[in-house]
Image (tube, rainbow, N blue to C red):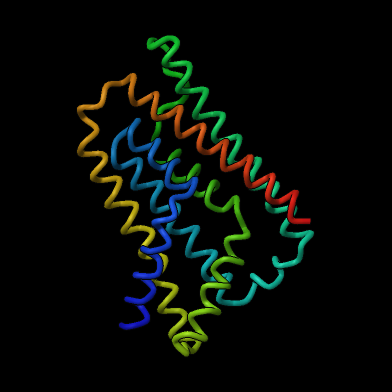
Amino acid sequence: MIPLLNGMLTGLFLQLALGPVFFYILGITVESIYINSLSGILAVTLADYIYIVLSLIGIGRLLQEDKIKKIFGIISSIILILFGVMILYKGLVFINDPGQAGGAAWTPFRSFTSCFVLTLSSPLTIVFWSSVFSAKAIEKNYKKKQLVIFGIGTGLSTFLFLSFSMMILSLLKSNIPDLMVQVLNCIVGFVLIYYGITRTVKTIKNR
């Protein structure tokens, strides 16, 4: 139980560093119903567990080469920018003409697939998890079985943090006007584009 709790606490602490996936799900939450957000959160959790498993079996070592890091860094940045542009466009279309939907409505399937793709778009996450597990193996003297339990806890924290925070937002958003919802969408779009551009710059500089 102790490795599981340590994993959950570590994961919850890491969640405080809000990333592009959080803001993407935030956009889904303010624009649609909670079931769509929950579907996206399940996709993110699944993708995280895939990367956690790959980290535990040592795939992360293969991605530590500079050339591979650069390729995956640029690909993930482009995907982030594309997602950001789509959300920003949808928000701007609605603000300019409220009669326009600005794009396809969210569904559980669309939320799941888009969040899954967005989360998987950064394979270098494997390197991050590999570093976390290596540090914990040294710090706590965890064996392989304990690291697996620790990994289960870290992945579970993703689901708990996102589902709880989005549920609160979903309950509070009834008083938010449609225009404000689309303004928030624009902000989310800008944030994703910002993450994509900064990640591209970092990838190019780290040659």
